[in-house]
Length: 143
Image (cartoon, rainbow, N blue to C red; front, side):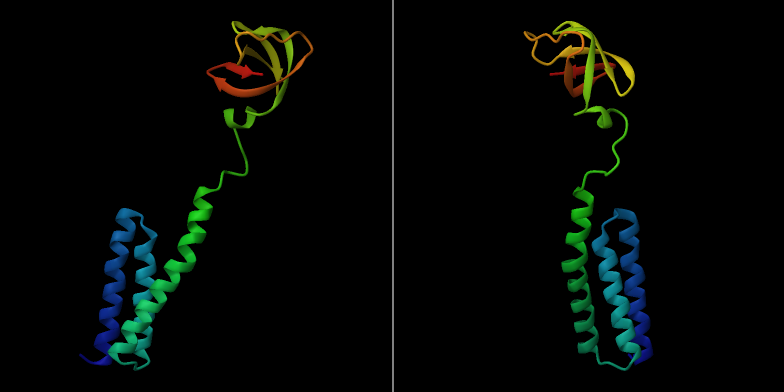
């Protein structure tokens, strides 16, 4: 196998690793594909087979060691901009009609909402500020 053949084979390996990347959406396959491209470049510069394999392993492992933790951190972050029900949880509202375990009304984010007390034995009077802890359907659960 000549040097030209070796770099072509590394590119074939890179393309073959790209297929499971697309099918499974596992980024590790992409990192191995980049390692194969790096080995193809090393082969193109005349490196021997041992050096090509070392380049493949070093680049692949380095990418997995560096990129994977960064990607995991980004995946686990909560979105910066909350919308819908998530944006209402934790906000304060003003009681418009007495709120207790069976119901009532509050003004939340400029809109009138039906509300229910989280603690069924507790009630909130008109004008009192409450915290929204959850939304169930069109009813805010407050405390």
